[in-house]
Image 1 (cartoon, helix red, strand yellow):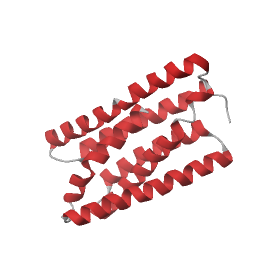
Image 2 (cartoon, one colour):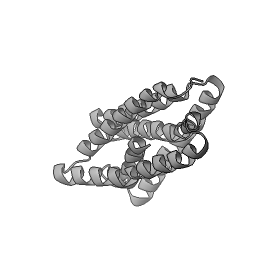
Image 3 (cartoon, helix red, strand yellow):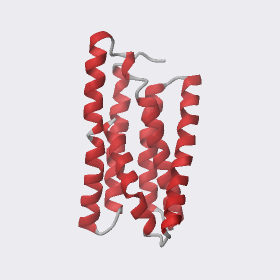
Image 4 (cartoon, rainbow, N blue to C red):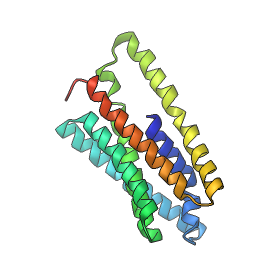
Length: 175
């Protein structure tokens, strides 16, 4: 959860500034950022529906984190502004899908009293990502004068989250 919340909050707070680099007006920034999140929300619902029908929560959580990382890398490597926005929307889609899938997994190995403490612990560590993401993104942007290093760091966090999600296969009963 920490890994995808790092990316979520970093993009969520810096997306308007990233869009401003495309010489968009304030109203255009609002519409484009909203469109990115509408597409990501639709992708989240579609992915969750697919997982409910087919199973494979851990594998799909892993793939959603990896998709988000690929989206960040694609945004970095894109030559045009609008293609970068498409890739950022891909990253947001992966993050939102991870958010929808993640909370279905802990109840599979946490039961009884352990569930209450375990879920509280997961949530407390995870929400720290909402602090770390914007700090890292802002610091790297300030140091480099570009959002590229921050986006690369977000890709790194999501790759790590994907690896950790894959390791859940050791603890979770397969579905």
